[in-house]
Length: 302
Image (cartoon, rainbow, N blue to C red; front, side, top):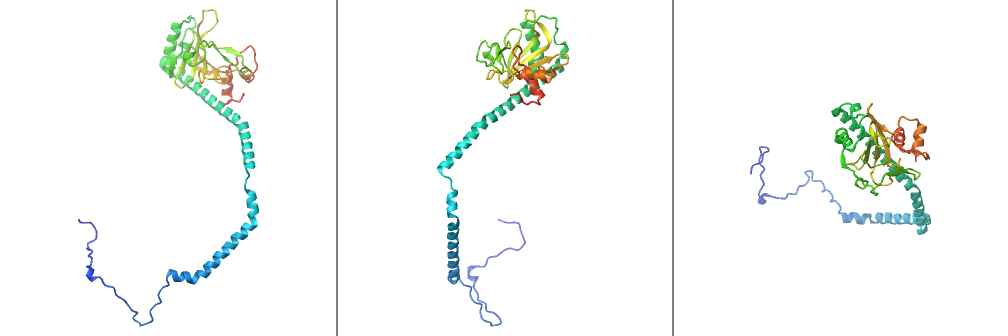
């Protein structure tokens, strides 16, 4: 086998040529003294090593004598440990609910903002495909289940990530088959009329419940399409608390402008605050989405 390298070839002398030579100084001077072995050096320095060891031992004893009592006192007794753990537990019990509550508020506000973005994008995309929204409905037309479905299938369904359409409360994840209401902060039941032939209810792929109310509801049985429509948003569908202002919010659609905004967004702060968290007996507390948006997508009212 050949290797690339320098031109010279290394030759190894045969064993018979290996010799050991002893050289003497040419000036015939005395030979250099031999180096001492490690064992000889140890014996010569053993007293120094012993002395250092003894001094180190004395130093350690003095240090222990000086601070031994203090060092022993620095240790915690079992009672002290238990008391400390108890204090930590009390502090945790006082602060954890607040931390969890603040975290839940952040999650709620984030989901609500996402719902607002999804709906706003849907109306813009639909306009791009179907023309200006002001022409989507004729307010003189009486609404029926058939033409409502046709309207929704054209202008909304293609632009939302829909998991399922709901024909009952349970289909949308609510525990009560005939649920038609939610509660407010003060426990008052508020009817939202979730179900019926003049409303479209659905679940999105990310678990939100949306109810489109596309009518001008006079309650006379002669409801007609309206360009001022409403969307109820339950950010976690049928899961608790099912409470206005906590997980259920109201938006409105203005097809003339067009835009989607939290219901009551154009009202003054006092009205928004009262109709979000105020103790109103004869009105829905349905402006919390507007309050959250006014507060830069943070929940500050409870």
